[in-house]
Length: 392
Image 1 (cartoon, rainbow, N blue to C red):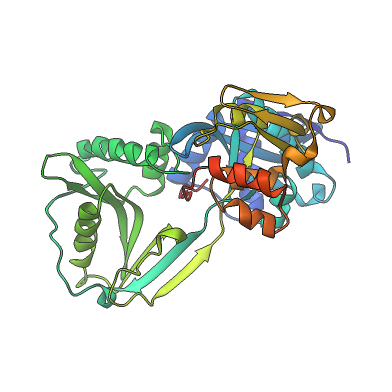
Image 2: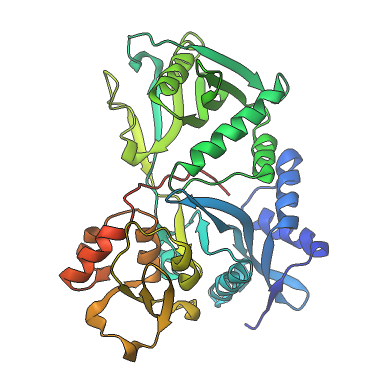
């Protein structure tokens, strides 16, 4: 089945809404529809057209995230949809390939998505990079010890809203200190408000008057749901948990999410409660050469070589020479493969963002190279676990 592939125009957004509603089995209304229409206008959406009819689409959100404390422009893949009569005909393959080309044009060097199938997107070069823990625990599991709540201010989108600017500044500071976090712009903060307008905030203020942590939360029936939790230090973290704990007469359970590597809850007296590890985010390097040029290698003193395979972004295929001054793409005949670390694009993407160390990829058959090569690469890749909580 032959389709034409191109960017969807603003006057065709109604077709985007129709295919989203059909394929995701529920219609957006109210704030959710307003949010969707806004992102449909500012995103690059690649469509597969059968004549004038939209057969499938991939929406690319213009976002940003940190990698080892450095901001990167990121293409967030969202609302991937194909009408059933066009499935299994190569439409999605072409849409994803075109999306990579478009992200490259937009200088989005990396891409993140939430997969409906990990194996499907891994085939196209994305791979897992963050293990999230969804937790649920009863209030009676809190430590009996009382912590100092200190100076804490509570507000919402409708009361004392001016405090929201302090939260935005605090989140931005935290994101730049962290590996893998989204760098939220005003569009994203607006999205959070539209989707959870009844959310409340608790802001922890240090003795010097500076914000040091916050939670964004909603209260549903018997559940206190933590939507966001940021703490710059242990004092702020304890203060925020104390704030949650004083709600114990109103609720039976607390829910939220944390990074698996943080071993959430083990500092409590009774850490045995429900935790579910969720693999819901995948990452991909869009342009290897440009990504390596700005990537913050750690103490790079010796020249390194990298051989990359990428079946769906041919500009990434090849051998790269990396030194402290520049990254150069070489012909394979110009370097011995014995000097190369060899990885495919999916494994390379998750490795460079810090998902696992190189020994793990070698053990899994996802990286190869001599002992000398592996040792040199292991020295220069920062050891920061990623965490990513954005949903799109």
